[in-house]
Amino acid sequence: MNFDLELYHSIIFLGLNPKKIHTKNNAYFKQLFQSVKKEVYLFHPIYDVDFEQPFTPKRKYNHTLIQNEAIRYLNNVFLEFQNANSINERKYLFNAFNSIITQKFNEVYSLCKKENYSYSRLKEGIEDLLIEDEVYIIQYLKTELIRIYLEVAEKFGEYNTNDSYTIENIYRHFFKEKLPSPNLLIEAVPQIDTKLINHLVKNDNKEKFTPIQNDLTEVPKGILPFKTIVDKQEYFSIFEDALFTHGLIDTKYKFVETHGLQKEMGIIYAVLIQKNYFHKRDFEKQRPIKPIDIKKFLNNRYKTTIDREFRNAMKNNNLVRHYLDSNFWLENLRSF
Image 1 (cartoon, rainbow, N blue to C red):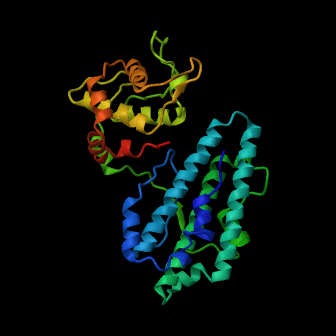
Image 2: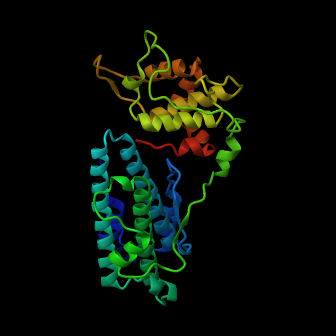
Image 3: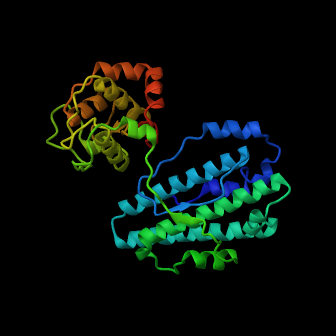
Protein backbone atom coordinates (compact mmCIF):
# COMPACT_ATOMS: atom_id res chain seq x y z
CA MET A 1 0.00 0.00 0.00
CA ASN A 2 1.32 3.41 -0.96
CA PHE A 3 -1.09 6.32 -0.59
CA ASP A 4 1.65 8.96 -0.76
CA LEU A 5 1.10 11.78 -3.23
CA GLU A 6 4.73 12.21 -4.21
CA LEU A 7 4.09 14.23 -7.37
CA TYR A 8 1.83 16.67 -5.50
CA HIS A 9 4.47 16.90 -2.79
CA SER A 10 7.01 17.87 -5.43
CA ILE A 11 4.69 20.58 -6.80
CA ILE A 12 4.09 21.99 -3.32
CA PHE A 13 7.64 21.85 -1.98
CA LEU A 14 10.25 20.60 -4.44
CA GLY A 15 11.44 20.80 -8.03
CA LEU A 16 8.00 21.00 -9.65
CA ASN A 17 6.95 23.99 -7.56
CA PRO A 18 5.77 26.64 -10.06
CA LYS A 19 7.88 29.37 -8.46
CA LYS A 20 11.02 27.30 -9.00
CA ILE A 21 10.48 26.90 -12.75
CA HIS A 22 10.13 30.57 -13.68
CA THR A 23 13.16 30.42 -15.95
CA LYS A 24 11.69 27.71 -18.21
CA ASN A 25 10.26 29.07 -21.47
CA ASN A 26 7.08 28.13 -23.34
CA ALA A 27 8.92 25.77 -25.69
CA TYR A 28 10.10 23.75 -22.69
CA PHE A 29 6.55 23.22 -21.41
CA LYS A 30 5.16 22.54 -24.89
CA GLN A 31 7.66 19.72 -25.31
CA LEU A 32 6.83 18.28 -21.89
CA PHE A 33 3.11 18.52 -22.59
CA GLN A 34 3.46 16.53 -25.82
CA SER A 35 5.23 13.71 -23.97
CA VAL A 36 2.53 13.20 -21.33
CA LYS A 37 0.40 10.07 -21.76
CA LYS A 38 -3.15 10.36 -20.50
CA GLU A 39 -4.19 8.16 -17.56
CA VAL A 40 -7.53 6.39 -17.81
CA TYR A 41 -10.00 5.50 -15.04
CA LEU A 42 -10.48 1.94 -13.87
CA PHE A 43 -13.88 2.93 -12.44
CA HIS A 44 -16.64 5.46 -13.09
CA PRO A 45 -15.79 8.70 -11.23
CA ILE A 46 -18.53 10.59 -9.43
CA TYR A 47 -17.05 14.06 -9.73
CA ASP A 48 -15.31 16.13 -12.37
CA VAL A 49 -13.40 19.40 -11.96
CA ASP A 50 -14.97 22.41 -13.65
CA PHE A 51 -11.92 24.66 -13.51
CA GLU A 52 -10.82 27.50 -15.76
CA GLN A 53 -9.18 26.03 -18.86
CA PRO A 54 -5.39 26.42 -19.03
CA PHE A 55 -4.21 28.77 -21.79
CA THR A 56 -0.44 29.01 -21.28
CA PRO A 57 1.96 26.10 -22.02
CA LYS A 58 3.03 26.06 -18.37
CA ARG A 59 -0.56 25.76 -17.18
CA LYS A 60 -1.47 23.15 -19.80
CA TYR A 61 1.41 20.91 -18.79
CA ASN A 62 0.81 21.24 -15.05
CA HIS A 63 -2.95 20.85 -15.45
CA THR A 64 -2.44 17.54 -17.29
CA LEU A 65 0.21 16.40 -14.81
CA ILE A 66 -2.04 17.08 -11.81
CA GLN A 67 -5.10 15.55 -13.47
CA ASN A 68 -3.19 12.39 -14.46
CA GLU A 69 -1.87 12.01 -10.94
CA ALA A 70 -5.40 12.28 -9.51
CA ILE A 71 -6.64 9.51 -11.85
CA ARG A 72 -3.62 7.29 -11.16
CA TYR A 73 -3.94 7.81 -7.42
CA LEU A 74 -7.68 7.10 -7.33
CA ASN A 75 -7.18 3.92 -9.40
CA ASN A 76 -4.59 2.79 -6.86
CA VAL A 77 -6.81 3.58 -3.85
CA PHE A 78 -9.84 1.85 -5.37
CA LEU A 79 -7.84 -1.30 -6.11
CA GLU A 80 -6.44 -1.37 -2.57
CA PHE A 81 -9.96 -1.27 -1.13
CA GLN A 82 -11.19 -3.83 -3.64
CA ASN A 83 -8.43 -6.26 -2.68
CA ALA A 84 -8.76 -5.79 1.09
CA ASN A 85 -9.79 -9.01 2.84
CA SER A 86 -11.65 -7.66 5.86
CA ILE A 87 -13.58 -4.71 7.26
CA ASN A 88 -10.73 -3.92 9.65
CA GLU A 89 -8.28 -3.79 6.75
CA ARG A 90 -10.56 -1.37 4.91
CA LYS A 91 -10.82 0.79 8.03
CA TYR A 92 -7.04 0.86 8.22
CA LEU A 93 -6.82 1.82 4.55
CA PHE A 94 -9.32 4.65 4.92
CA ASN A 95 -7.55 6.06 7.95
CA ALA A 96 -4.19 5.92 6.15
CA PHE A 97 -5.71 7.66 3.12
CA ASN A 98 -7.47 10.23 5.33
CA SER A 99 -4.27 11.08 7.17
CA ILE A 100 -2.31 11.71 3.97
CA ILE A 101 -4.99 13.69 2.13
CA THR A 102 -5.79 15.98 5.08
CA GLN A 103 -2.07 16.58 5.56
CA LYS A 104 -1.92 17.71 1.93
CA PHE A 105 -4.89 20.04 2.59
CA ASN A 106 -2.91 21.67 5.39
CA GLU A 107 0.25 21.94 3.29
CA VAL A 108 -1.60 23.61 0.42
CA TYR A 109 -3.30 26.03 2.80
CA SER A 110 0.06 27.02 4.33
CA LEU A 111 1.55 27.57 0.85
CA CYS A 112 -1.43 29.65 -0.30
CA LYS A 113 -1.29 31.78 2.85
CA LYS A 114 2.46 32.33 2.56
CA GLU A 115 2.45 33.22 -1.16
CA ASN A 116 -1.03 34.81 -1.34
CA TYR A 117 -2.26 32.15 -3.78
CA SER A 118 -5.97 32.74 -3.15
CA TYR A 119 -8.68 31.62 -5.56
CA SER A 120 -10.36 35.04 -5.34
CA ARG A 121 -7.13 36.59 -6.58
CA LEU A 122 -7.12 34.25 -9.58
CA LYS A 123 -10.73 35.16 -10.42
CA GLU A 124 -9.98 38.88 -10.26
CA GLY A 125 -6.96 38.54 -12.58
CA ILE A 126 -3.29 39.11 -11.88
CA GLU A 127 -1.19 41.48 -13.95
CA ASP A 128 2.01 39.44 -13.63
CA LEU A 129 1.41 36.35 -15.80
CA LEU A 130 4.10 34.30 -14.06
CA ILE A 131 2.46 34.83 -10.68
CA GLU A 132 -0.95 34.09 -12.18
CA ASP A 133 0.48 30.79 -13.46
CA GLU A 134 1.63 29.96 -9.93
CA VAL A 135 -1.78 30.70 -8.41
CA TYR A 136 -3.57 28.74 -11.15
CA ILE A 137 -1.42 25.62 -10.69
CA ILE A 138 -1.73 25.51 -6.89
CA GLN A 139 -5.46 26.26 -6.91
CA TYR A 140 -6.07 23.55 -9.49
CA LEU A 141 -4.01 21.10 -7.40
CA LYS A 142 -6.11 22.07 -4.34
CA THR A 143 -9.32 21.38 -6.27
CA GLU A 144 -8.13 17.96 -7.43
CA LEU A 145 -7.13 17.10 -3.85
CA ILE A 146 -10.65 17.93 -2.68
CA ARG A 147 -12.09 15.80 -5.48
CA ILE A 148 -9.86 12.88 -4.51
CA TYR A 149 -11.12 13.03 -0.92
CA LEU A 150 -14.77 13.21 -1.97
CA GLU A 151 -14.46 10.34 -4.48
CA VAL A 152 -13.00 8.02 -1.85
CA ALA A 153 -15.33 9.21 0.93
CA GLU A 154 -18.37 8.69 -1.29
CA LYS A 155 -17.35 5.15 -2.14
CA PHE A 156 -15.70 3.93 1.07
CA GLY A 157 -16.86 6.37 3.78
CA GLU A 158 -18.46 3.54 5.77
CA TYR A 159 -14.93 2.50 6.80
CA ASN A 160 -14.01 5.96 8.13
CA THR A 161 -13.50 5.96 11.91
CA ASN A 162 -12.52 9.65 12.08
CA ASP A 163 -14.34 12.88 11.23
CA SER A 164 -15.89 12.97 7.79
CA TYR A 165 -16.08 16.14 5.71
CA THR A 166 -18.49 17.55 3.18
CA ILE A 167 -17.14 19.83 0.47
CA GLU A 168 -18.32 22.86 2.47
CA ASN A 169 -16.53 21.53 5.58
CA ILE A 170 -13.29 21.07 3.63
CA TYR A 171 -13.24 24.63 2.31
CA ARG A 172 -14.15 26.13 5.68
CA HIS A 173 -12.10 23.89 7.99
CA PHE A 174 -8.93 23.37 5.96
CA PHE A 175 -8.78 26.41 3.68
CA LYS A 176 -10.59 29.03 5.77
CA GLU A 177 -12.80 30.09 2.87
CA LYS A 178 -16.30 29.66 1.55
CA LEU A 179 -17.26 27.14 -1.09
CA PRO A 180 -16.61 28.81 -4.48
CA SER A 181 -19.63 29.86 -6.49
CA PRO A 182 -20.18 28.30 -8.92
CA ASN A 183 -18.92 25.03 -7.46
CA LEU A 184 -15.67 23.80 -9.04
CA LEU A 185 -16.77 20.17 -8.69
CA ILE A 186 -19.57 18.88 -10.90
CA GLU A 187 -21.10 15.50 -11.67
CA ALA A 188 -18.83 13.46 -13.92
CA VAL A 189 -20.14 12.52 -17.36
CA PRO A 190 -18.82 9.17 -18.73
CA GLN A 191 -16.84 9.72 -21.92
CA ILE A 192 -15.42 7.28 -24.49
CA ASP A 193 -12.48 8.16 -26.69
CA THR A 194 -13.40 8.38 -30.38
CA LYS A 195 -10.50 6.12 -31.35
CA LEU A 196 -11.92 3.46 -29.05
CA ILE A 197 -15.42 3.89 -30.51
CA ASN A 198 -14.09 3.43 -34.05
CA HIS A 199 -12.40 0.18 -33.04
CA LEU A 200 -15.46 -1.44 -31.42
CA VAL A 201 -16.88 -4.55 -33.04
CA LYS A 202 -20.60 -5.22 -32.82
CA ASN A 203 -21.27 -6.53 -29.35
CA ASP A 204 -23.99 -3.91 -28.72
CA ASN A 205 -23.64 -4.79 -25.01
CA LYS A 206 -26.28 -7.51 -25.43
CA GLU A 207 -23.93 -10.14 -24.03
CA LYS A 208 -22.36 -9.82 -20.61
CA PHE A 209 -18.72 -10.75 -20.17
CA THR A 210 -17.43 -11.77 -16.73
CA PRO A 211 -13.64 -11.68 -16.28
CA ILE A 212 -12.33 -14.71 -14.38
CA GLN A 213 -9.15 -14.43 -12.33
CA ASN A 214 -8.41 -18.13 -12.54
CA ASP A 215 -8.01 -20.99 -15.01
CA LEU A 216 -11.10 -21.54 -17.15
CA THR A 217 -10.75 -25.32 -17.34
CA GLU A 218 -8.39 -28.01 -16.09
CA VAL A 219 -4.86 -26.97 -17.06
CA PRO A 220 -3.36 -29.22 -19.77
CA LYS A 221 0.12 -30.64 -19.45
CA GLY A 222 2.77 -28.14 -20.57
CA ILE A 223 0.62 -25.07 -19.74
CA LEU A 224 1.33 -22.95 -16.67
CA PRO A 225 -1.65 -22.26 -14.35
CA PHE A 226 -3.19 -18.77 -14.24
CA LYS A 227 -1.93 -17.89 -10.75
CA THR A 228 1.57 -19.11 -11.57
CA ILE A 229 1.96 -17.02 -14.71
CA VAL A 230 -0.27 -13.92 -14.32
CA ASP A 231 1.21 -11.31 -12.01
CA LYS A 232 -1.13 -8.28 -12.16
CA GLN A 233 -4.39 -10.22 -11.90
CA GLU A 234 -6.78 -7.29 -11.34
CA TYR A 235 -5.34 -5.40 -14.31
CA PHE A 236 -5.34 -8.58 -16.38
CA SER A 237 -9.12 -8.80 -15.80
CA ILE A 238 -9.46 -5.22 -17.05
CA PHE A 239 -7.46 -6.19 -20.13
CA GLU A 240 -9.67 -9.23 -20.82
CA ASP A 241 -12.81 -7.12 -20.46
CA ALA A 242 -11.33 -4.82 -23.13
CA LEU A 243 -10.58 -7.84 -25.36
CA PHE A 244 -14.26 -8.73 -25.26
CA THR A 245 -15.40 -5.13 -25.77
CA HIS A 246 -13.23 -4.90 -28.89
CA GLY A 247 -14.63 -8.13 -30.32
CA LEU A 248 -11.44 -10.19 -30.00
CA ILE A 249 -12.92 -12.83 -27.68
CA ASP A 250 -16.49 -13.95 -26.99
CA THR A 251 -18.25 -14.51 -23.65
CA LYS A 252 -16.72 -17.99 -23.44
CA TYR A 253 -13.20 -16.57 -23.87
CA LYS A 254 -12.85 -18.02 -27.37
CA PHE A 255 -10.77 -15.95 -29.81
CA VAL A 256 -12.84 -14.61 -32.70
CA GLU A 257 -11.21 -16.15 -35.78
CA THR A 258 -11.71 -13.26 -38.21
CA HIS A 259 -9.29 -12.38 -41.01
CA GLY A 260 -6.60 -10.01 -39.76
CA LEU A 261 -7.29 -10.48 -36.07
CA GLN A 262 -4.58 -13.15 -35.73
CA LYS A 263 -1.98 -10.47 -36.44
CA GLU A 264 -3.61 -8.14 -33.92
CA MET A 265 -3.69 -10.84 -31.27
CA GLY A 266 0.00 -11.65 -31.79
CA ILE A 267 0.84 -7.98 -31.23
CA ILE A 268 -1.40 -7.86 -28.15
CA TYR A 269 0.46 -10.84 -26.65
CA ALA A 270 3.75 -8.99 -27.17
CA VAL A 271 2.39 -5.77 -25.63
CA LEU A 272 1.25 -7.63 -22.49
CA ILE A 273 4.79 -8.95 -22.08
CA GLN A 274 6.24 -5.45 -22.59
CA LYS A 275 3.86 -4.09 -19.95
CA ASN A 276 4.95 -6.79 -17.46
CA TYR A 277 1.62 -8.50 -16.80
CA PHE A 278 3.32 -11.84 -16.17
CA HIS A 279 5.62 -13.28 -13.53
CA LYS A 280 9.28 -13.58 -14.51
CA ARG A 281 9.71 -16.87 -12.71
CA ASP A 282 7.82 -20.05 -11.86
CA PHE A 283 8.64 -20.20 -8.15
CA GLU A 284 7.19 -23.68 -7.67
CA LYS A 285 9.44 -25.24 -10.32
CA GLN A 286 12.25 -22.73 -9.81
CA ARG A 287 12.64 -21.81 -13.46
CA PRO A 288 12.22 -18.64 -15.54
CA ILE A 289 8.96 -18.01 -17.38
CA LYS A 290 9.72 -17.44 -21.07
CA PRO A 291 7.70 -15.74 -23.83
CA ILE A 292 6.86 -19.15 -25.29
CA ASP A 293 5.27 -20.13 -21.93
CA ILE A 294 3.14 -16.98 -22.07
CA LYS A 295 2.11 -17.66 -25.67
CA LYS A 296 1.07 -21.21 -24.79
CA PHE A 297 -0.91 -19.98 -21.78
CA LEU A 298 -2.76 -17.31 -23.79
CA ASN A 299 -3.44 -19.66 -26.74
CA ASN A 300 -4.91 -22.24 -24.39
CA ARG A 301 -6.98 -19.61 -22.58
CA TYR A 302 -8.43 -18.15 -25.80
CA LYS A 303 -8.63 -21.47 -27.70
CA THR A 304 -6.42 -20.35 -30.57
CA THR A 305 -3.07 -21.14 -32.22
CA ILE A 306 -1.33 -17.74 -32.53
CA ASP A 307 2.35 -18.38 -33.30
CA ARG A 308 4.00 -16.72 -36.32
CA GLU A 309 2.12 -13.48 -35.61
CA PHE A 310 3.46 -13.47 -32.05
CA ARG A 311 7.04 -14.18 -33.12
CA ASN A 312 6.89 -11.35 -35.68
CA ALA A 313 5.62 -8.92 -33.06
CA MET A 314 8.28 -9.93 -30.52
CA LYS A 315 11.10 -9.11 -32.93
CA ASN A 316 9.54 -6.09 -34.68
CA ASN A 317 9.06 -3.18 -32.27
CA ASN A 318 8.06 -0.84 -35.11
CA LEU A 319 5.12 -3.14 -35.89
CA VAL A 320 4.02 -2.97 -32.25
CA ARG A 321 4.51 0.80 -32.09
CA HIS A 322 2.46 1.37 -35.24
CA TYR A 323 -0.39 -0.75 -33.85
CA LEU A 324 -0.38 1.09 -30.52
CA ASP A 325 -0.52 4.47 -32.25
CA SER A 326 -3.94 3.61 -33.65
CA ASN A 327 -5.29 1.56 -30.73
CA PHE A 328 -5.78 3.86 -27.77
CA TRP A 329 -7.27 1.18 -25.51
CA LEU A 330 -4.16 -0.99 -25.66
CA GLU A 331 -1.70 1.90 -25.47
CA ASN A 332 -3.35 3.04 -22.25
CA LEU A 333 -3.30 -0.28 -20.44
CA ARG A 334 -1.34 0.15 -17.23
CA SER A 335 2.37 -0.71 -17.45
CA PHE A 336 4.40 -2.12 -14.57
